[in-house]
Length: 106
Image 1: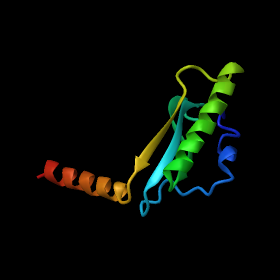
Image 2: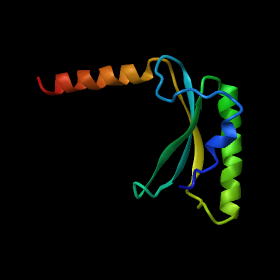
Image 3: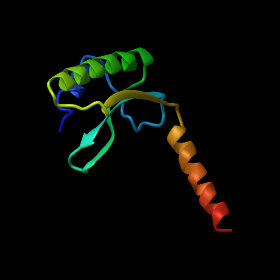
């Protein structure tokens, strides 16, 4: 998989679980081809509870992506993003989906 080595760059800063809904998370993702799933998708590189750490990871991951492009190992569609998920984001979405299903089947 082309992500080898990317998450190792963030080892000097503590990461958080991207699925931990009890805290605000800054999630760094790489849009790339996933050969296991035969599709392009966003793959989580790392997650942090601090914006500065997330931005540092974005910069390092982008630099690694540029190096992979120069070596012919990545194409122009690959890119790095950071999404922010506030505390309780997943819970609110679960509740919203349940409510939508209830109103749809009445």
